[in-house]
Amino acid sequence: MSRIYDRVALIGLGLIASSMGHAMKRQGLAGGIVGHARSAETRAAALELGFVDRVCNTAAEAVAGADLVVLATPVGVMAEVAAEIGPHLAPGATLTDVGSVKQAVIDAVQPHLPDGVHFIPGHPLAGTEHSGPRSGFASLFRNRWWLFTPLPDTDPAALARLRTLCEAMEANVDVMDPAHHDLVLAVVSHTPHLIAYTMVGVADHLRRVSQSEVIKYSASGFRDFTRIAASDPVMWRDVFLTNKEATLDILGRFTEELFVLQRAIRMGDGAALHDYFTRTRAIRRGIIEAGQDTDAPDFGRTKIE
Amino acid sequence: MSRIYDRVALIGLGLIASSMGHAMKRQGLAGGIVGHARSAETRAAALELGFVDRVCNTAAEAVAGADLVVLATPVGVMAEVAAEIGPHLAPGATLTDVGSVKQAVIDAVQPHLPDGVHFIPGHPLAGTEHSGPRSGFASLFRNRWWLFTPLPDTDPAALARLRTLCEAMEANVDVMDPAHHDLVLAVVSHTPHLIAYTMVGVADHLRRVSQSEVIKYSASGFRDFTRIAASDPVMWRDVFLTNKEATLDILGRFTEELFVLQRAIRMGDGAALHDYFTRTRAIRRGIIEAGQDTDAPDFGRTKIE
Image 1 (cartoon, one colour):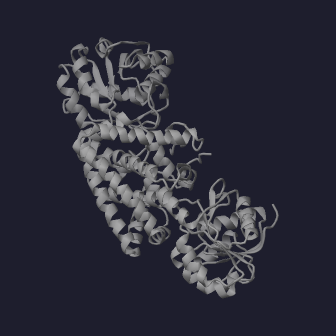
Image 2: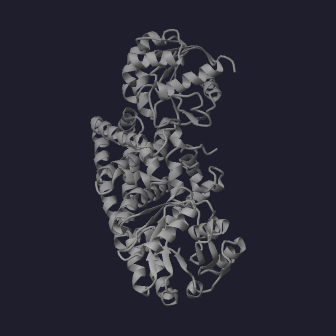
Image 3: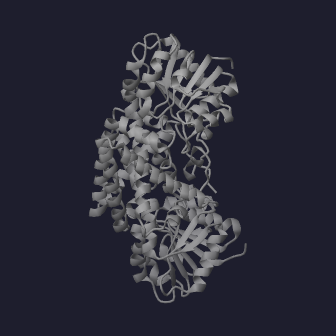
């Protein structure tokens, strides 16, 4: 693969940025990669790991002369970073971000950008429960979705170039409206994460059930919840603070439904439970028939030994 | 491995019974295996698949002369089956079950048993989202827990023999009190399943988010929820009807916690969210340090392509 950008600036050097750095290095997709993180320790780690060519002490320095700038900080500090780098962005540069919410990022970042900079908000649906510069790896984006939510005036050529970069990192690219993105993610990711956090918190309170028992016997289901609930606290705090409306909407629907099922249990209404579970099973069947997942037993997973 | 029981009767021929039949056949653990299911189609499938040697039209016939009887029906019909087979059980025979709840099974089954029969309630923590006689396979129990909740007067020799059978089917055996079993399972399995059913039901209601989008973008989290929510509706109905108190207890704690987090989101209380997520992350770390799970990225899973 040949070079797609001459100089890439990674602002924030955690799981996503380090994985991008490794992936771009491996394939020679960038002429040079400059990094910035607030913590000197993180900057030193990035240099040591070699997924950047050099680091800068400020974000403003790092973006100077870059034709691609990637905002990979927690969503909560993006406004501040955008205000800092705005005056230093090169004319014609592309600015993208990797935040898990999109409308809030647009509201936070766009006011600080000069004319002539192509701002293309993005979100790679990839991650692990680990964080920090040492957690990245080049194949993180393989076969994962990378969603972009372009603005009405986004330059098609700038978008096409960014798409080429993501596809070279083995991601599948899709484009959608920011508000729709935030609703879809509230359903498939944000609310399920909150639920997993909650369930792990509940187990922690139960002194009658020892922690070791909870883990020992949680062959499926709960063990995955604990993995999800180990994800980066700052990132998830910012997700819920910035995708508040969609998350509260989905949570409201969730608790309504849960109360209906809880009441059926309390009243001993077996028919209602059976109907509900039959309906959700049909949804799953539809998914398999649509070729969106395998029908392999054991929930399609290799067992964790 | 040599023969452990001379004649095993499987009452109910679904996922668990068929897996037991295959596992016992493969290793020659039973002199003969007799099966009974209510449906003629299921009985014919069991014979065709060969995990039983013969089938009987009634449970009473099937248990005659068996030294091990396995109740593998939904929990909701176990009282009725026990009443039918009680008078036909051989003196000295062992009766076990594979139900997901234990106190309710004991209450339902024990009154119908004659003296001299060893009743040892059991629960293999193994399964897939599939059900029926064609879904079983011999390695289902490999490295899974098989819990027994013996009664105060359980014969240690009968328990030891049953344990040998389960270990020969590659399961790990543990013994606990029935009420404790039901509470632990409410935490690690029953409540998480109800939550997964609920979340899938919510997604189904959201016409603004197409089903294909929900699946397409659900790399982690939600897709597992749909698998869980595809499990056998009759089995799960009976779980919630018969482990009502423990499930309602855990559900009550869950909704309390969820409301605390929901309020933090609504009020924009980032500190509370950050504290909560940091605490659950520490729980996960404790699990890894205890050697109970791997620290591999991507949630320890092989990707579903």
